[in-house]
Structures are given as C-alpha cells and as structure tokens.
Length: 520
Image 1 (cartoon, rainbow, N blue to C red):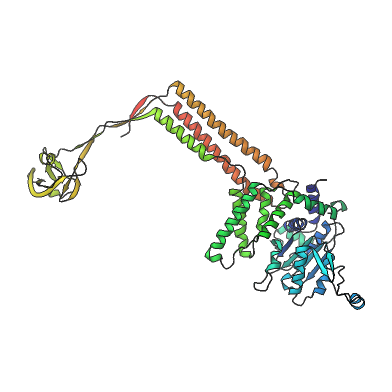
Image 2: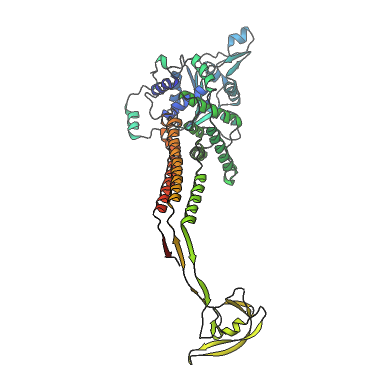
C-alpha cells in the first residue's frame, strides 16, 4: 500500500463520530508526521481535546496525555511526581514519568499559556530536542504531536514568545455551523472516543522513521520558492505600514524552514515527489500571530499562488509586438494618404484680410500693407467695416510686423492670426495587395496561429500533468484549486484573444480592394 491510500482511510476513520473537524484532524495528522506542534484557538466546548484523543489512534500502541493548565500547575502534574524511593535510596532526583507527558505519543495541553516558567522551559526542551532530562537520565520522548489549546493568545511581555513560536500550525476552531450537522451532533450517539482504526492503518514507529527520511528527499520546485519569496515581500510591505508597526508579522528563518518541511510532508503523504501549489496554501496557517492578521496572511498566500506561482510562462509581449509590426507592414503596403489641402487667406471686403480675435473696430488690414510687412515694427493703419454705410473705413495706426507663421502678424507686440480657409481634400487610397504578398501574409498568419495553438496545448498539458492533483490534496480544501486554475483560465482567454485578433487581421487584408475615399 502506498502512503496516500493509507492516510486517506486513516483520516476517514479518525473523523468517525467527529463533526465538522476534518480540517483540524487532517492538519493535526500532517503536523504530527512532520514532527511539528499545533495550536488550537477556540472557545470551550468546541472539541479541541477530542482531536488529541482521536489522534492517538493514528499511531500503533499510541497513548495520550492531556492536562488542563492553571496558574498553580506544577511540573509534577505534567512530567510525573518525584520518585521518593530514588530520592531516599539513591539520592537521585528523578520523576516517575509513566503515563505522563514524557511517555505519551500525543500530548494535549489545554490553557497552555497559564503554564509557569519551569513547565515552559521543560516543554521547550522537549519540543526542540525530543528529549526529557529526568535527573541524570535523558529520556527520548516518543511524542509525535503536541496539541495545545486556549481561548486566548499568549499575553505579551510574559516570556511566552519562545514557546508560542514552537507551534508551527495555528488554527481557529469554531463550533458546528451546518444546521443538519448540528442536529446530528446534539441528537445522535457518536463514537467519538472509540478506536475505529484498523491495525493496518496505524502508523508504526518504523514507518514514522522511514517516512521522515523520505520527506527530506521531496523536491521543492522553483515556482514554490517563488511563492515563498513573494509572500515574504508581502509581509515586509505589511510591516512597513504605519498602522501595523506595533503588531508586525514576524517569521523567523527557523520557522520558514519548518514551513517548507510541512509542505514536503504534505507532498509525501499525497504520494508526490515534489511540493505543488496546493501544498502552498498550508502556509497561511503558519504565519499569523494575531487573529487580526489571519485575513491578511490568507490573502498574501492566495495572491502569491495565483499571480506568481506558475512555472509556465508565455511571452505575450513578444507576440503582441510582432502582431503590431505585422499590422504596420500591412498598412504601409496597402494604405496611403494623398493630401491636396492648401491653407489660404480669406479675401475680406475685396482688398483686405481679417484679423482673428482683434478689436472688431480695427480688424481689417489691407492686403498690400500685409504683403509689405517686414520683421520690424512699422506704422500701419488698420480698418473696419462700417455696417450702416456698408463700407470699409480707416481707423487707428498701430505698430505691426510679420508674425511667426505666414498667416499671422504682431500688433503692438501681440500675435494674431489672419482668417484663413482650407482648399482641397485629404484622400485615403487603398490598394489591393499583390497575390504573392497576400500569400506571404497568409504564411505569417499560419505561423502566429501555430504559436497560439502550441501555447494552448502547453497550457492543457500543464493543467493535466503538473496540476492533476489539485483537487485531491488530503490537507487542503479542494475549493482552493479554483484560485490556482483561475490564472490558467485567464491565460487561455488571453491566448484566444490573440487568435481572434490574428484572424481579424487576415480577414481585413483579404477584403481589401482598390479604392479612394475622402477622409477630410
């Protein structure tokens, strides 16, 4: 039996009699195989301790230890009482550890943040080194999973940061949401505490050790590294915002290393040789320190996967530039403009030109005076049209010289344009392409369509080969596959847009015929 079928059936059995805790149980199994601890945040009575009791059944000869912490809890209650006989007869300070944390497969510590410093320090040693120092002895702890729980996060300034950092996976556990599931939970007899796992499904110590070596051999593709770097960049940007400076998201290098091993474990238990994009969704449960950060880190992970997680890249810009050059070539070969328009001065009142925008009582200049202007100011008389008598009359004398254009003048150092009109027309001449030219263009069209067709085939191969496991990941909600596939869908649409444009270009040049049209 390969690993995935076994874990699939194991998860199914562990969820027997447990309602709406599939994610918590699956991630608890994943964390335990990865050798990591998990923290459950939730109100009392939402089955947090039940998860630990069920998890022990995943391991052959598994045992559990659970304890509800309080401010007065002592190491004796967690690690076992001091052996009086050893102290009396051998002068050794040792504990009786049987049936306590040092001998348990699965440990559940409720209200863990109420633990005192002595318990915290011992826990850190157990979590870091998987050993418990019992007097002169170093006991190798068989613990596969430490599940801690609380209805609150660790208080700041109480020295809990080191212990908090050891819980790689952090989940918010809520009560039953679905109406029918709630009815079942309150009315049916549930086998929540019975061992329904067959012996063949249980993970043996030999398997556990063997798997841990194989997990370290799982490949990490470049696109997964890229997703991680993008997430780190998002976190840096988040921390730089003024409103987040008091509560930044801090992820240590050690934590990133553990996150990557969690992803490797997911890939291994899913019978894959490499981490994929769906595994990367697990990162979101390893980043937040405050509940207010949950939504932000989830968005970081989604965006990084959706926009930056693809090893498949297409040079759309290159194709777009080529099509623009192709359209330019067709236009230059088939379309020309013939412009016969000429701008001329309007003859006003026979021998005058009209000055646009100037005083209506002085808005005419004699043509003979205009034609004799130089670049130096001259005293020139202006005129106006007297409507009542229907005649042109002279008016004041002004300093006038040539303007910057051939149809303008300076009057008292202010430039004015003379009234003009445009004669002639602008025509667009369309020329039907030569048969040989059209054949060459058809060849280019075929080449471009071959490029887009190859892109679509490559995209489909990527979807069916590289992304075939999207909806079968044991530890990730299959609905998140939509995030991964959305980029592929938009990429396919972009390719199809290119195909439409290519065919339109071909259709346009094949419809061309010799003609002239006035465009202005």
